[in-house]
Image (cartoon, rainbow, N blue to C red; front, top):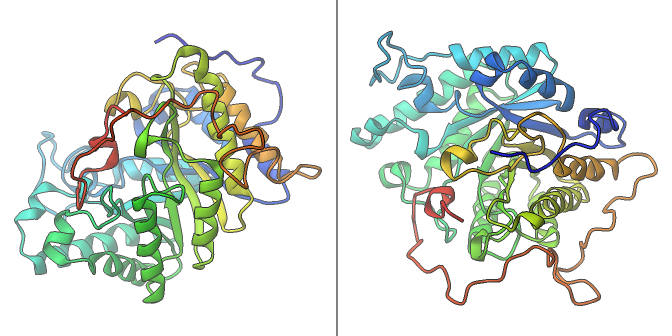
Length: 403
């Protein structure tokens, strides 16, 4: 795939990590990491350690990879149905490397129906409770003192904001969410515990309302949930529910979550652009990264930006969607326009910077009548997306895989 963006000069200013170090406010700047490039691509760990202060393990801390398949507990590579047998080898390599580099590590994820071993559905409810609790204690116990921040429950909401009809809801009822947080807190009382979901970044949708209401309910019950993760897997050419939220909508969402007593992080950001005309891609991607981060930085509750990868050479998007260039470094590890967008946003926190910059934060339409993103935003189709989304347990990236 041809490179769309060329760096002006790889030495044309400070790294992102240095900008944060020189800022009046410190936040997490993290990237999702994978084992194979960490070991086999020499530039991958170099760029990670130079540019970021945090990492999240993208794959190998999920339930199925730990005890059912890749890397798998059996020498012949066959899957195991022994839920009590774990293989932490690949996860340990990533976590230990990060700690040696002085990077903060976030654990992802303890309870997500998509990466739960399929044969768990054959169990009776009381046995699922036993296995889920044991899994949380096993994983958190293994990393206690090394991983101090965890995504506990991931994507429990359907596209319409109701609870997804996944294995846990069907077998255990809605209380499984609060149970997971209570077990996680019991397993490690010092850990910071997060609920994480997708397409909830800005106010104005039924799912973002469901997200807020779920967290408000958990806080009202004194459930030990400390943070909210808003994923930010964006498609610059998206329409309907897949349209990127405005900075104003994101700011309002973070604000009201903060008033619940939660810290808020953008947890899995990437920006797909390949469905836009090529002449618009760089501009759109840079503006989305820049403006969304600027909006978040104006809110005291915001504590970090985590990208789902950092180089177009290694991105989940090309495996689950299509060829794209959604991240801030190109395949040659050169800085893209999006990189400078993030750096400019972070620079608003430095001495002499202007919080909020010149981003439209008090409305969705400027004084001249132009909506945010009007230069690249695609028109809505004449017909709605339709479909029955109530209780749908498929993740958004699977339901709308081409948008």
